[in-house]
Length: 170
Length: 192
Image 1: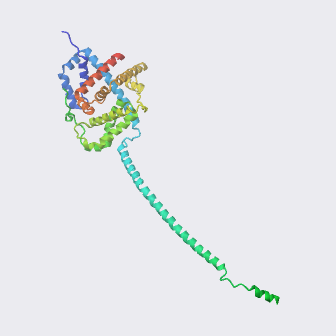
Image 2: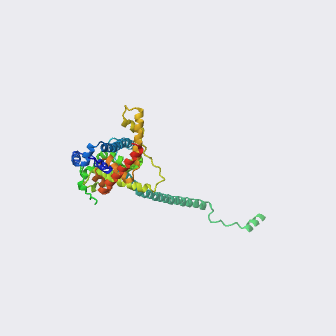
Image 3: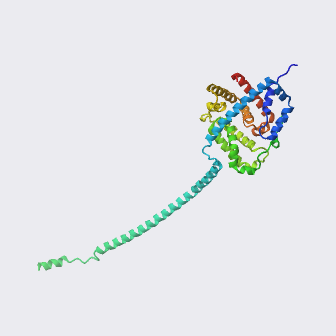
């Protein structure tokens, strides 16, 4: 009797179904599947189909192993900055949030503070200006008094030139 | 007819949103997995790092919406898948940006896989084989690669892949078949 080989699709189907590797329950399910599937039974008996499936499985295994090695190295490199108990990025997120809040707070209060300071300075300048004016006024008043003192008081009456002349003629 | 997916069908190993509150634990357990998936999908170290962090940040923010109907890993992969999709869309408009391309250390990996006792010839053969393997997987279409990675690297169940990618179960299976066919064709072409 001529033995029919498994089609490519059937071999792929067996590889896709594959034994579960997560836990015992899935393994049990896979084993049950194997015992009931005629394609699996054929695979066990037929060297040609078995070799074909094994080549595909070997390919997948090789890719998987190399991918695990490669990505594990890349992961170590990528997250090298994080300590064993990784410095969680959400901690960084919290820090960033607090930082942002602080910046906002500063953005609100610094202008207010500056405004207040500017106002104070204006007031100070204003008061010093008033004091200066007062001093100036005082000085002006003093100068005015001094000047007024040195100016002769009501002018004395002029001597009569005619009287002066007669007396000289005498 | 397409099968409908119910999240209740998925096995639950880790549960409760309260567990999601412990983000340090979550990152310790799942970061490698999420990063691996993102890196193999995008092939850019910096972007993979950033998307992985973003993925956990979004998970933390949305922890209240997690109903423990599926695994946390499935939920995280779903978030990562969405972020990858968004990134790929955005990248279309940022073609001038230079990517820090993920380069594969083929000699190093080949040495590790071949073993320390292997001859130099055997190492070279292993390196060559490995190069072919990566080229074949890289040649897969976007959807084929996504389901291939989730099924064979992350070893997720078909239902979980459907849940994470938003595809229907039959669509996932179809993409997986096409991916394996493309792999077989590539292997024949490369003489593997």
